[in-house]
Length: 119
Image (cartoon, rainbow, N blue to C red; front, side, top):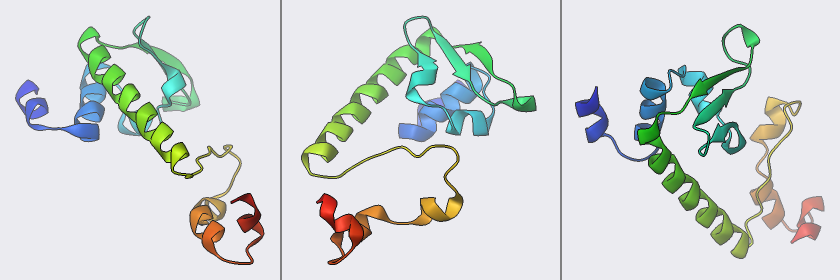
C-alpha cells in the first residue's frame, strides 16, 4: 500500500491516505469538513456515516503534516479568491440539487441580473 501512496500526489493521495490510515469509507472521506478534523487531538468526526450515525476515528500521526499543509494551501487559495472578488459560500444541507446546479458566478456577470447588484 505504501508503494501505491508514494506514487500518488495531491488530493487523491490525501484521500487514499485517509481511507487507508483512518479507516474511512470513500463517501465519508469525500464529505469531510475542515471543522471535523482535529489536528491537535488527532481525531476525525465522521458525520452521518454507516447506519446514519456519527463516530470518531483516530487520525494517524503521519497524516497530520500532510493535512496541515493542505489546510494552509486551501486558506491561501481562499484569501486569493476573496482578494480577486470571487465570492464563496457554503450551502445549507436543505438546498436542493437544482439550486446547486445554478451558476452564481455566471449570474453575477449577466447585466440586469438581480444578483448583479452584489458586484
